[in-house]
Image (cartoon, rainbow, N blue to C red; front, side, top):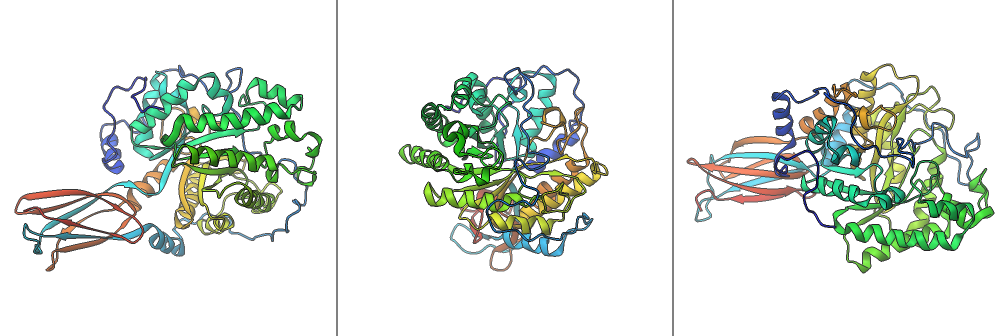
Length: 515
């Protein structure tokens, strides 16, 4: 797929990745654009079902096909007591882990034209981009089709995020009907310096418009040959279409919960009431492994630097998913290919049941508990991503301040864990969110309390800007959050600037303003 400029109402020049988002946010607020209400109606094409309704594919509020005791043929999980009170102050241990795992030493050496150290040179270190992925799901129609509400949508996405995933338009049936809309959205995001995740090659959920009509017929008629042939071809088609423009693909979405393709292929070998007991268990089936083998073969044959991942829901508050999901991951690793990404959706509900149980569990937990839950998924040879975070469900939320604090806890917990490399919301604005309960903005674009949490952490507390004078050896050192920096040294009014990437092991850059 090409990276040509796309259609849409925005005509401004592409935002340069080298420009710091924190600086842009300040300029945005100064211009009075932050939180301005939409002045028009909804003229944006809606992504959704066959009838044009919004996609209501959701994490279940209660587990799908799960026995009361949570048994699934795997060892029983020990129930965990956790503090469901959200602390107002950051946990010192979580803060320590963030410093340990998310920062490195950046050293600037200032020399003259002959290579000798220059003392007292002025040095500025300015972060321009996080290494960690801070992202959101994006509605392709709202992004590309002209509307007044889309103006705000397009304004905020490159200001607040460095990573995006297309909410619906890459799902199989959507993509076959209108691949140009998906292409335009991907190109728009790439042109503004965002990384794009692929969601999704295959998703076997009925009733949400994601399954092509001929495949739905094949499922109903138990036409396994058509299902296998078409799914394998689609995996190849969509991965090769986008090539290296996509950083990673969820090959199969929600294999534990949505497996219509496999029902069509295996028929009665899958127990639809208790799928963990059937002759074929969907999330450890041979066909699932073959889909991942096919994706791996496609990227190898086309020399694509693309990761492959799994994605599912209910991993945090519920315990029935733990053994199943780990079994699925191990099955793919052993029988198909080594996974690159384990996706934990992170839809958080406020309920009254105990955390890490199966009866209406409350997802409101502290950052340390979030990190401890992630431990379950971080030892399978793959990175972990929070892929679809929101505070979407439950009648027990006190207010949006509490939701903001829960965002803080999950974000801090994830960022403190060395196995996690990204945190993505499943939409950020109520006007384009599957439950109209997005974290950051109300429908009129008024900022929610969680907006301050997100910007305060991502662009302030976890953002590095330092300045000072080189020491007697011409050296200036600081500890910075990992990412991309502009480093400037000034000697007698002459300055030189270089871009440097700070990652594991630190970085050293030599600057010679007089050279």
